[in-house]
Image (cartoon, rainbow, N blue to C red; front, side):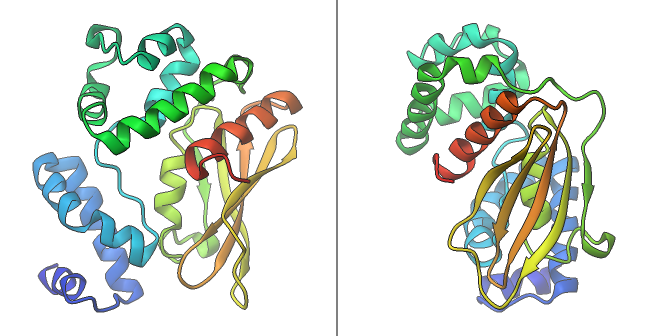
Length: 232
């Protein structure tokens, strides 16, 4: 692993096998050594996002888990909007994220924008697909989650949303990339997404927990707001 980290430090491109080994190492750090993971995050998270389109979460639970909680308990939104952090109202797993984010100007501003969006669109929060009953199923090209750089990390983040049941890549653009990443409404039980790394744009399906056009469109709006600032 030292050789791989040395290549990151020196700005050298990782091969596919090296990238896969790095991702497996990161998952092991996250599961077994949170302190070591945090040190790794501080040093390499931005680099991996910029050079490998790979998103790393700072905390085990973050904004995506908070939004799931707000879907279940929308009465918490006014307190968050006013920055009234009564920690006893939130699961302990969310405390590190909340305590950190509300003290960081950039993160606090992003949260305020998101909370205002939710407050102005309360019907959206109240009409989202129901929470799934089983784990998310993720399908990748050739059954290899690391074949397309950054895609597994993107699917991992999407998987945190309780109304998503299945994620599946299905088409690639290598000659020309999409103008922008986005999520689109396709059907009452399905959305379509575009994820772009340095090499290509990858199209994928997002399957929802129920077939309801209004709820599907609301899910599409929410995901676009969180992932792309409302674009798409």
